[in-house]
Length: 68
Image (tube, rainbow, N blue to C red):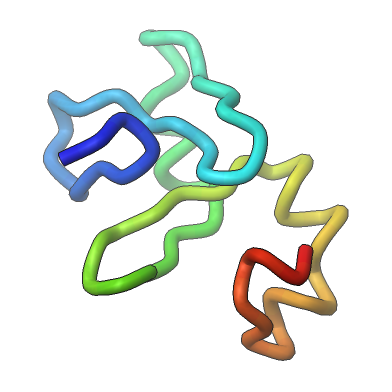
């Protein structure tokens, strides 16, 4: 499994699949509630709050991430 995809296991580091941002260790639990979780090719992906806000219309329109 690569760093940009992580399952919901609590011990794994979140990495934004768009910009590569990672929350601090003490903010992992809050990020799991505030980041967008998606699926790409059968893998779980995470998108940080900033990238989610910037690309909201594309995400809601279910456009492939290459479009945004």
